Structures are given as structure tokens and as C-alpha cells.
Length: 252
Image 1 (cartoon, rainbow, N blue to C red):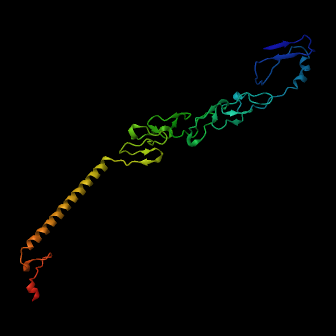
Image 2 (cartoon, rainbow, N blue to C red; image 1 turned 180 degrees about the horizontal axis):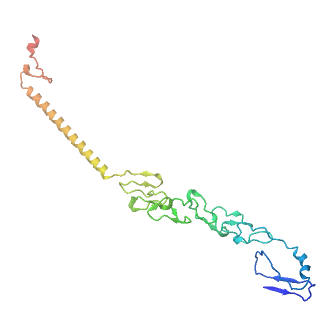
Image 3 (tube, rainbow, N blue to C red; image 1 turned 45 degrees about the vertical axis):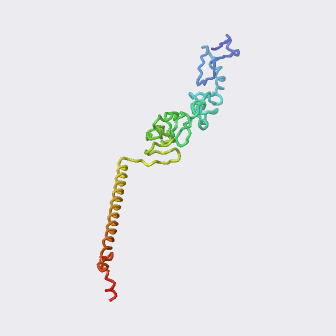
């Protein structure tokens, strides 16, 4: 909209008003005057007071638009704030006007990108997605959820999505970790079970054989003593096989 009040006399004061309905950056203005002799010469001093806008707007102004007088930004690009949009969003904030909050699941506790909200170093354990705001699916864990749980958690419970440990314990006979205690059960494989059974049988057989041999030896010794008891003294043998001389011969 504009209001045009041009008097017929070229020597009277005139006013020209243009309402753009908002604040805009104007880079050039072209005014066409009436075409009569000498008019352009009389306006030369008036145009001499116009200043040339040759200073660019601050780098992070939205759409590169700023106030034509003081250079303040009309709005800031995503991730920036302040009058001249030279200040990054505060930690854990991002986006337009720094109005968005980071998800808080970036790797090693780092903050998200102040412009995009993404985790530049990747997601922490147990999280995935472009903004690291999605938990690992059931049965997976670790960085980027690329690891699979062991499947041996107690009573079919799910493993921890960050560590992969079975927080509720492990099924009997399986190898897994229990919560933050890092306790591990010994895994029993079919091969190790066969070895244990074979060793037990071998020990049992050896014990039985040794017992039989000892019993037979004991009985042999007992029977030998009974046999010697019925012989004359001169024919009795000692345990080492030597005869015991008769008492009268020893006396002689």
C-alpha cells in the first residue's frame, strides 16, 4: 500500500509513504520522477544523504535477513540464538529458537548436535534411531543394538538392553551374566558331561577292583594261619617262609 501526494508545484514539500505490512530488508529503491527540465538537478542534493547498505547481515540470521539499521537478526537459523544469532544453543538444546531438548542418549554422555539434535558420535548402548530416542528391540543390546541376547536368561526373561546381562539370573546349566554383579555360571556341554561320567565310572571300577584284591589277600592270609596251626612246631613256617626250629633243637 502506498499513499501518493504529489502537488502540482515542483517547489512544495512532498511526502511519500509505503507500508509493507512488516519489517523487511530493502536493498535498493528506484524512484522515477516527472520528466521536466531541471528537476533531476534539484534532487541531487537530496539523494546525497542516502547511505549505501554494504554490510552483510550476520551469518546465522534466518534467510540472511536482518534489521537495516542495527544489523540485528529478524530470526535465527536452527541451533543459534541471540540478537545477532552468534550464540549456540545451550547444552542439550537444539533446533529453531533452541526450543527442542536432546534425548540424552548420546554415546559416552556427550550432548547432541545443537543444530540437528543428532548424536555426532553415535548412540549410547541400548539406544538407536536418528536422534537416539528409540530403545533396542527385545532380544538385542549394545551399541546400535547389533548384539543378540544369549537367550538363556531365567524363565525366558529378557536381557539388559545396555549390557546384555540377565538381570534376573540365568537358566540352570547355561552361561550368562547376572545383572551388575557379573557372576557367570559354568556352561555344561555334552562333551564335558560325557567326560565327567566316564571319569566317575573309571574311579568306581578301580575302587571295586582294589577292594576285591584286598579281600582276597586277607582271606589268603587268614587261611594260611589256620593251616599252620595243625602242623608240628618244627614244620611251622614264619610269615616269610622260614621254618621254626623245634625248641629242643634250638636249645641244643
